[in-house]
Image (tube, rainbow, N blue to C red):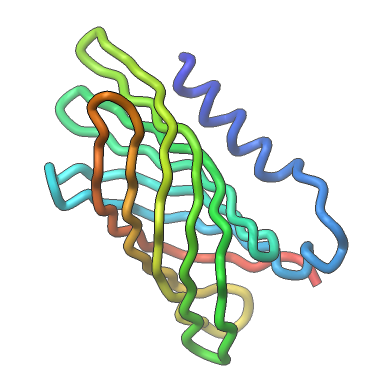
Length: 154
């Protein structure tokens, strides 16, 4: 239950953020899948882009171990008509639980990706994300993420 509440709270926070009107023009929602090749862990991602700020929540699960990451990235985007590459860095919290043990640690990440625009208000996105989790047993992983991006606003 606490995991579900954490995820719902993060999602609500993403939609309640007060931003200046010029940032709302760039509002979008990304929904997709994720995969960590080391350990073959599947997952899912929910992310918003409000100007250059990109809050996110992602979940990975395998063999009874669940990892929930939540935080925000600062993105540098190159808007072009069809293919829009971007890069960014961010921070947040990572919570791992399973087999009667759980821990929450700080995390930092670097990412690079691109959006492939489709007609109207949808695009495909894909990115590679390096995740570093702090703590006595520092954890490093590369995640591959992709899905659909929906544009809202003016």
